[in-house]
Length: 95
Image 1: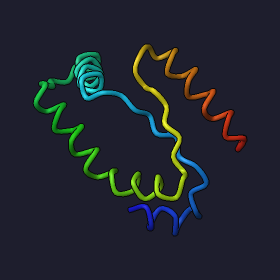
Image 2: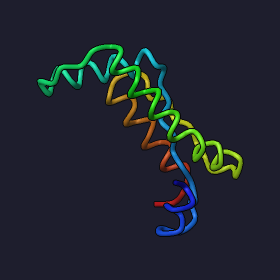
Image 3: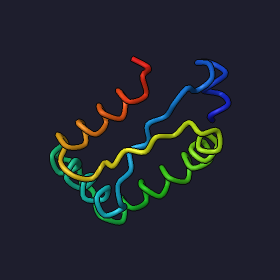
């Protein structure tokens, strides 16, 4: 998947990886589903997280091996995460 993406968009210069625990991700999925009026249970949320990790792990591992991944703590409030993300982006000097 990464090779196809880079074939169409060019080589990746940097990646910001938002990280949070499975507990935080599960809670957010359940809250988002509730807010959207969709039924969601904890098992379904955990399956989504597992699928996402399984599908993205090879690309992330490849980018990490190339030294192109900056990790951002995505736990906490939306405002906190946004501030951390902005700070990480600004530190890359790509803007």
